[in-house]
Length: 128
Image (cartoon, rainbow, N blue to C red; front, top):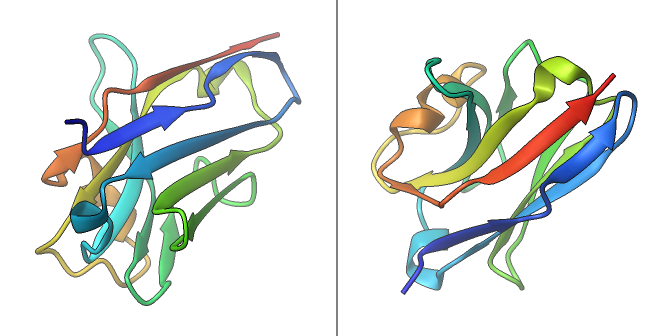
């Protein structure tokens, strides 16, 4: 049984938008932290957004103002709305969750790659 399942990736042109979704199993959704990170082959994982149980949100500088993280508790789903996409946003995107770390504060997103639970990833490709 998958605990986190992402969808919504694809190919878009620069300036376009995509919305990623992540359906989270109920016991994982109750975690203190939910977040997104991305990875390009042979490069370090980059945490980009996190949201804690109370709704406190943080973003990486690289995506702030363009990406929006949100969640829908009725659907146990985490979202990442991505606007003004650029070729440098081409990555595999992963949703993640952790039930131990405090996810409040402006830099919680940095920990997203280290969260205990993660999905299988969804590819986003942005062409110029």
